[in-house]
Image 1: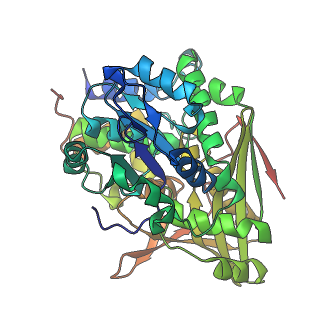
Image 2 (image 1 turned 30 degrees about the vertical axis):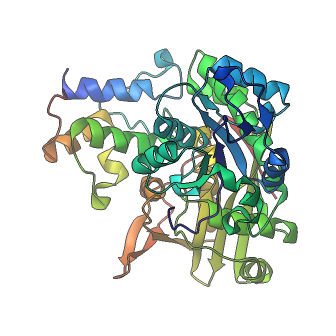
Length: 345
Length: 86
């Protein structure tokens, strides 16, 4: 088992002799493992997603899952006869999370090893251990927020959006406009702090520094006159994506200094990445100050670096630990995309 | 295909507006014209790296290297890339 301590975001289940006892293709009258639905529901209420990787006939297996009333729990099920490592790869890509946040549960050592050999960062577990899942540390997120409880619903909404986007003929901007997106930026309130901490822990790709902040630190920034803590929420015609962006700004005589900026990767494809940054740039310009921004390369946040550079930020300094300080003269600020309604409170 | 044609085709495939509304010269600044969105920058860098066989260094990541067909072609030529991909 990989030695990661990262919180698990998704549990991927085998079906035969893992989720249920028996083998579907052998026409067994399969029976759910005792208490397995409780395990799934418990994890779901903590904001942990579920998927399936099973070697079975897709239609037969999905029919069974529906009969059991479980189809709403499983995102992007992979049910076919191909290697499970490829299934896990697709699930990872579809949900857009890192392999070291996925737990794969299967009764067959061969399948677990095949998956591990292709994805060394994944965690696997023997199906016999399923009752222990809710007690595992990595399946107990530090905070359970309103956003985490709604997470599965938000992903299901995303699936609907993707289907519609794939069927859409015409330019991307027209599709984005048809989503009727609203982007709200406001000062963090106390009830936002748990989610803000969760964002610093969960966000990897669009995260400028990779630093995490805990609730008390964020609360202190929220109350400090020398800081501004901003939160963003995105909604569209399907519903809310939840609180998806966070920025921490330090205010001094001469500068506004972006200490932290991140955006959930779930909204990456919506072209909203520069909205928060443009807003902060506009406000800084209005205040007649200069804008600094901290950046540190992690192995996954290059997109954020590209984002700053294409927003015309220049590297002002870089220390031996790779901490980069960006500066913008605010001469070029990208306008808000026309297909999003932006509200600032 | 000529390098500039390839670049133009990549940009056209990633436009956020209708292709027939998006007339641009090789020298036009595609970012200022609003033809592309925030996602495009990363896609473009990935495209140049994978299709042209160039590693784009941090110092090269200046918008001035990438804001028109001409500038992108010039950048690729300077870096010695652009060999026809297999």
